[in-house]
Length: 278
Image 1 (cartoon, rainbow, N blue to C red):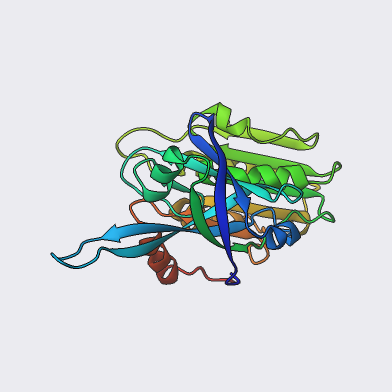
Image 2: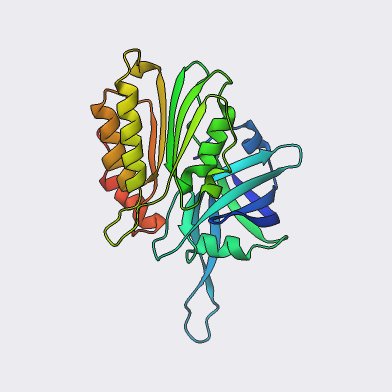
């Protein structure tokens, strides 16, 4: 990501669904965001934390970075909105979310007009190809902002299978209707042994099976976007696509977060688990 730093000032904050808190910011320089053509545009938000100090010493400030997808941009008003997916438990998620106890979501829930954050970016790599006939767009609650932006950017004649794993259907309602998009909502698996992304894996596998069984299906005409919990996306869904003969090299397949890890730990996990690009 280019090292562009912007100052974000809170304009408004609201709960737009049971598990999503949306914060609207005024941006010191909207130009890099307005010029981005990526529907998965993201920023690294900088959170300042006080660290321990000994008696007589000034308290130091430590910076913590958290990565979030930009939900929407209003270039004319120099504003953007970011959705924070709120999760229970103790796992802090990278990508588009941290649990409600994590630093980013704790901040978002308490955000008030006038509050300020530093942001680095935007980055991004994906947008729907207007020349592609069919799209497979999948993700969990952390990917909803990118999924919503992608569906909104689809050409009117495009066909898309959209799969979203989210706790509440109201989260999926944040995705605009599209005449060619079939949106499937699955709820996260429950139980002590349930893994994050399990429902997404199962439904994506089923949809891929239906697609590849069609006599007229051409994998070269399918564009794929799959983002969510890293193990589910990279270790389960990616191999499923590859085994089905769907090209993964040009697809946007990425883990936004890893259960049990902070974003710092997740970056280490990603380095240790880079996929074979063949």
